[in-house]
Length: 271
Image 1: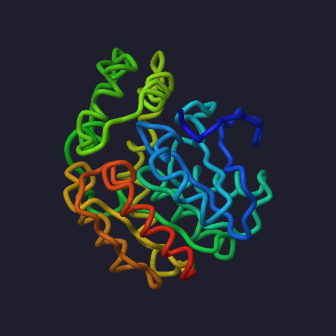
Image 2: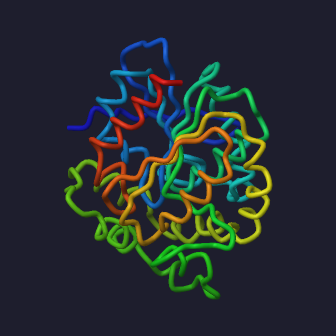
Image 3: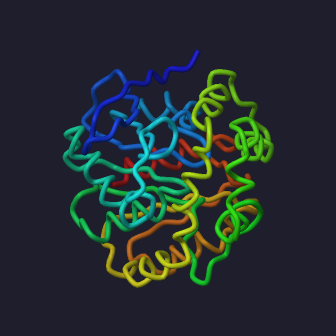
């Protein structure tokens, strides 16, 4: 049984799914869902992170089981919505953790709202210009025809993702949630977000040197989907950053859960 208990609330007119840790803490953290998973991606690290902060985990709009709105399916627009999420939960100046698709959105938010977050943790998300993506993600970004993806069912989508996870077996409750999050054509409906990378990542690249928010970049050393070059690109350009490489693949928050939690909680304590 997972410690994560989900609920829904309306934010900016959308039904957004979230989970909150039980115990109060003087440190607050906003955790954002990776793709194609959900906020249950934090199941393996939840108790460790909750010992160090009051947690609010959120399925970003259109992802997991939160309601989709087309105008939010780009990193810049999602960055603005992340700020609205923090406002809605009364998080005054939280740490924000945004792996995978959250990487670019969190950095846009930090660039446009310099004092909103105490620190940011990103990584495992496309960032480098020119694009340096591999495997299925590169296919998703550049596919000329989305029809095959519209034909994919939730089992196909989740299987594509979890078949690459090594050294960690998804608990059944987590697997079932991932499946439930990609019913119908939901996966294809989400693809415009990463397909915006070619136009949006160059814009982000121009903003990186001005971001003063402390940023920790965590990436899997063996990640073939989002190669380490993306993390190194960010580390070279962000003026206040730290790079932590963990000896696992793309799903570092699950494959390297213990090291991931240790890196994040150490970062929180230092910031």
